[in-house]
Image (cartoon, rainbow, N blue to C red; front, side, top):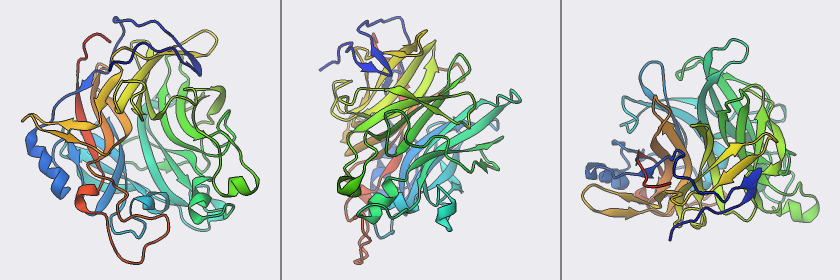
Length: 397
């Protein structure tokens, strides 16, 4: 099934006009069969960055001035007592390096982690997760600098569970540097915090780019209700929503806009945002294939109008990739998860590779929000990894 040019109201209004003369990120290409072994042993190979000792998530890649590709990714120990759920507690952001976009990547260092105690003095006491790496102009100097956006949390003990205590305190922060290798200056305050327009309870999962008019655009996720009373204590914060915010500086503050990026009825998540050919693009996790006709990663595109709204449209060929890997020997591997898309562009600004967190099998196996005492760890084939897919031109759309 193909997705027609679907009109939708967002920050913005989804336009019903399909045009073939606008850019497209393309579709995912095939991977070399030799890299398929990484799904079994979780060792790093070209196009599959994995580690048998670590959960991996949300790779965000950038070409440095050194000619190397720097992958910033979230990771947390495979043997942590919560398994996959450990991301909210002990995730850190690490950096790996490769000579080519597809790798193989080699881990270099931990870049950010939970600041630690005393937590009442820090918004980011626990974890560092879901990185978004960008290179943008410093408005004071005009110099290009690297900005690493991330999420973190602390435990304010305000809900019915330790898990929710951390969920509801999630915020978005940034660190900046002159080189992907650092040193990184971690800014003390979040760049955006709730209430943020329609996002009332917490904010997570940023995607950031600079607009043609010089302003900085952030797309992010949150919840609809500020929450109070017993319902809020038990996690009833309303539907998941996606908002957008603007700033005059890359380190913020980002000012949330009153409208939504997508309507609440659109089952999409984790927008990665960039500007190409005068258009604003978002690659998203397409929960049920409502945008691209198949579950996986799809995209929408839009224009910023004179009123400050984004007129979005869903192109006819909106799917970038279904939830699978196609290998060059004809085998197709179905995936349990494709999440946190990130689109890398080449020197001309054209999308060249799609990065995403992926898992072949359910990564929550042997995991629990409360620590397990039995010592069970996620099986290797269930361990999530970072996947890189080459992008090839898409016909018509």
